[in-house]
Image 1 (cartoon, rainbow, N blue to C red):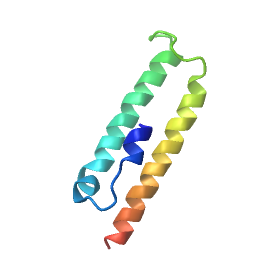
Image 2 (cartoon, rainbow, N blue to C red):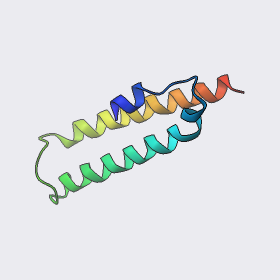
Image 3 (cartoon, helix red, strand yellow):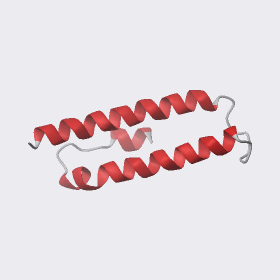
Image 4 (cartoon, rainbow, N blue to C red):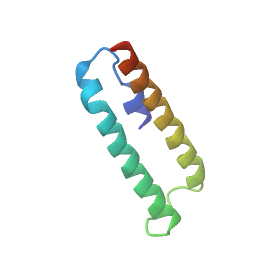
Length: 75
């Protein structure tokens, strides 16, 4: 997820078109994985899923900021 957010190219029109959906899909998959750990339906790979959830939230905010700044620049 972090690599996906950091690799967003503000000058690429494909990023503007498909980037938000890709980040959304990655976010949903990570959230499902974290929920399965919390609910005990996945192997206990992580000792602190709350910490990872916080990191995912920060990355979501970073991606949203990038897309917002790109859309303002294109306006």
